[in-house]
Length: 360
Figure 1 (cartoon, rainbow, N blue to C red):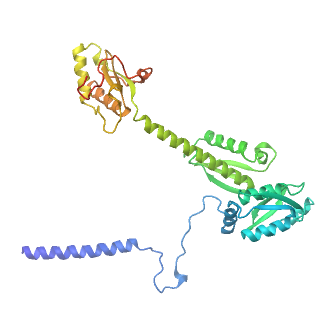
Figure 2 (cartoon, helix red, strand yellow; figure 1 turned 45 degrees about the vertical axis):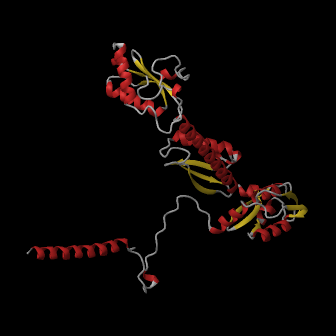
Figure 3 (cartoon, one colour; figure 1 turned 180 degrees about the vertical axis):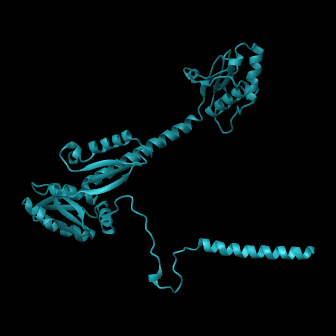
């Protein structure tokens, strides 16, 4: 009978194992995956997540990438027709460049205007900006439009606004208040394209906050470029500050500090009782912390009439405070005022930390 039950149990275990594998395989299988040999028309198309911000097409991205590259060769042109320079750049960098003839005609500008430029060791973007700014009386610029780099007038470029949503949750708190986001907006408006915002009364650009921690910006291509550079700079500076602060906190955690911890129960205690409390505290903490390079004459613990004066690294001081609360639950919190002027190592005080837990 026992063997029969054992055999029956083994069979049941085997069946459950097989079923478990089948269920696991079914769970892992993509319900929309196309079966081998099935017609493509039967496959369910993959759903793509909705874009959370403006994302330029592949052609625009490639042009942006080329613009950010260093010049492949110096630009050295003296009184050369702009049209000829553009042809050379188009061939050298393999990007489509066209003239906005309608906009140029409207201000009597011509692609044949002569330009002079001698520059090296900058990006193509900077070289174009410098060259077009010097192309005649009418300031020319460029935008990326319909997958080409379009040379147009500044006036025309300012009429073509792009809407981009910027994530700023790394610059403000995720549940940032309107005031916090407004401060960031004020910084943007005051730092980039100052005359291009409706806020200034001289432009068409708009910037609005949207929860959680987003900025919705309608601006020209060039102002968006400036805005992106500004936000990148803020992020780098913020990261550097956080790194420095973290390094400082790490260093501070290994430097002795002095704290006064109030103890009510010691107010009427006899000197010998205070010595007992002192020894009890020393024995209840890791006075000699492994790996801490702390000089023996720079740490101490002294029980006074109403407080314990202790100097050590912050981790040991926290242990002393917890130990005092265990011994005297009615004691108030740490009095940090005891730290002022106590950084000298406690010369001449009782209880100098000579050799460790019993050296007082």
